[in-house]
Image (tube, rainbow, N blue to C red; front, side):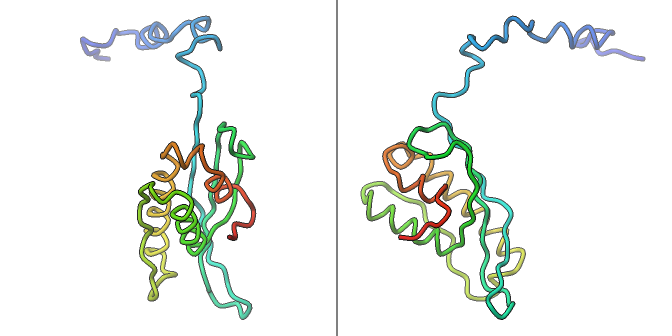
Length: 157
């Protein structure tokens, strides 16, 4: 067994010596504390929803949220939203906060809008949209609109 000059021959001893002692990782240590405010949003699990005749009609995306921000009614939640909900949400944000610059949504597609490629691209674009919106301090904590969109079972305005 050969060893490199930067790593001792007994790699287990090296790994154990590089760990912090358990006592150093106490809850009182601010370097290990939970951030003061955090908001994690994940746009995931697209689902093609059929119409009443059973034909593919539209796509919904699951939005999973974890937060400790007091203006959010729940610390963890999961809701489903379709593209038109995002369009309405963006419109509502523009009305409520006209001076806050908002990112664009991905364009509406009329052809092949239910293909796997389009659904995946849209999912990524909706994730970017929510990441930018949620990162704005006024929209994150100064408005109930974001919390309603991310956590209310039925978002309708």
